[in-house]
Image 1 (cartoon, one colour):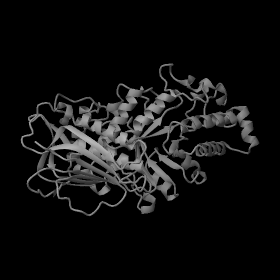
Image 2 (cartoon, rainbow, N blue to C red; image 1 turned 90 degrees about the horizontal axis):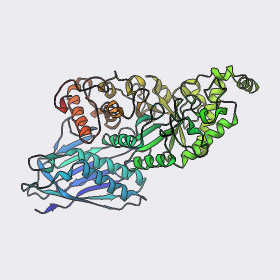
Image 3 (cartoon, helix red, strand yellow; image 1 turned 60 degrees about the vertical axis):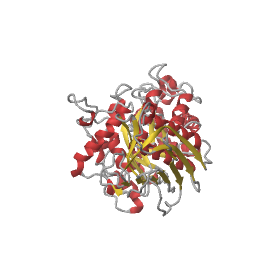
Length: 537
């Protein structure tokens, strides 16, 4: 039978045109507020049918994660052609067409078109092709990434029919209007406490895209190990656990490019001045003394030369506009117990708190010289917030109540309060992640816009490559919906049962795609309680 002409994806930065399509449609309006950017992606499925079917508004449940802003559906079923193809036009983005084609091929793999061998269409219309049109009055890169989200949504609407042996798109025409609630939707991984091989990191990136998380916060270095190559200071990675547990600059480039092609930014972090004992393995002069090894020596110019070298090398690899400079949990007692550093403090009329501020501000200045905007953990704000560079983004982690103070001071904020969004806290169940509201007690609209979003943190003291995915998922997906879906569409506490069933189905989808997501029931990283269906675990 003759196939349907195309699945149409239109990406533009203008309001959705007020037109009524004459054919059956799947429309996905993806408006991505990347700072001042307003993104629109439209996906239309044209179907060869003899009569029109009215689209009905969908209730609270759509089998897509995260929940879209609005959705309506019809009563037709389409079969997806095994020869589904894609064309792209209108893109001036240097690699945009290749990114879209790669995303299309991944989508084809995810919906398992390779399973379609001898299936029968049963007289139903076939979807034969995908056409992507990009209209660019603004940032095309973000527009292209919005199209990737549209393809992911489409993939979740497709199911393999084991009777017909075809991929089905049920309830067409679909009209889905969507946009992320927050521009920053992050996941932290920690490669200092336990080394994660590059393929594992890539698998984490893949899993992020399925729930539309878009920032991989790479906590590369900490006191336990320094696993990354720094060409400017080649002895720094002497602080790695072993010769085999290291990342070359080529590895880092590979990870960044892999993420970019999937619409994920990589945020690099070096934590200064604390959490830096491993730096001195290769360069002992960075320690205040051989017996008191952190924080980094504030009195030494070489300390800041090394930071400059690291950030200079980073700027060639990590192209995200932000860099994370840590600044948390700084125990300054080594500075006052080391005679040389103590004398330097006295010479400059500084107390320990003054030296802490001096270090953070000087590191920020170095980062800015390399074109970065800086994110710091919240202790920097708690101790000297009025002295921070006004472009600083404060990363809340200690608990509630900080974000509202940060935005009241006119600074931007990312929320990761540890009582709800730390994945290593296994006792926090998925519903705790879901109900954690970044804008709690922030009522002023201008201040709400200063909350860039949030991040779930996979600290690695007690996880490694063997169990990272089942510790992250499905709880991270609960936070992902909180960060993507409009507030008024989010499930309420009394709707947890229905939400749990929908999350269980998404967890099964992750498993089907090769992501070792743990059961929804029980605590984080729990084993299945008994033999049963995936959707009941």
